[in-house]
Image (cartoon, rainbow, N blue to C red):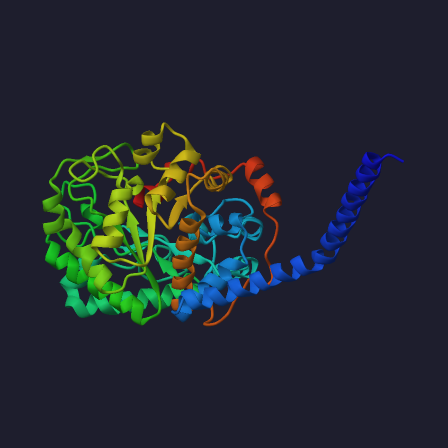
Length: 431
């Protein structure tokens, strides 16, 4: 045999042996790689505890670990309760909140309402905000019906005129207890707007045209409700002033931003000082602050709330079915929700979840919205739920329940919601 052939055979033999050794090593190392993955997951849990030293936030972050992306997004939906199958929809979607309206109380009894709300909460893996507009005066969803209360809750200014600040405080505590007894844990009130005159759109719902008086009113209401462990929401940031109704079209405010800081923002700053859990942002366009952009979709406006005002609670936008914001995105129901999240809203008043939830999830998958932003918002939502006792301290209500997004994703694409006509209802126009 020629020497060259022997050399070639020897080289091939060495290569063959090397390949066999490599394959064996790969096979032997497979279980080890799996173990390393498990260790990595454990290390991740440890680092979670290292990063979040606040026990409430740590608890919230642990709950988030057990949530799918779709469940995280749905936790950010403050959904106008559907007319059909509200229980089934809560079970399927796991909304962060339901908003009840007059029609939910008109032909029901207190006991029926308690039972229905208890069923919604039973269907929710994570307890939901059950919210209602019960401002007092002209906007009462529940107390307007005699089977619930002998007299509707009066307006703030009427209370003050008849009994001073103590009457306002007593009413706020009474309202908190009344709603809590029904299973309602959140009120979309008080109104912090400061109108200029009787002719202004928001005047009939406002406390006063004096910003100092409104600030004191807000402080008293929020503080009283906090003492009752009841969740309040001041609205409509940064203040309607003498603006028009955003339910019926765009509203452009041409006042200087300095005038807002001297007047309209004072009650909202008082609310932050009083530790209000929610701030609702309006669709008004403040030309001198972020020209052409509704406040609800303005990142600059939301940065102001977070950074300049130091608010660390939940920011929620006004209803996304309102004309004042739909027109800005050309009527695209999904895009308005995406832009509301990009701006910095932790929750959105959603009307068309089949479109809006899917649009937000798609925006995350496409990189338009960072997953970390979604999780930060959900953390704020869960922290308020823990703080106000909706979630027990230390409890991980969805522990071990992480599921598959595929079913909800498919449902979202196909779901036909029944809330598209909500903006036509009178009680929506009271938002």
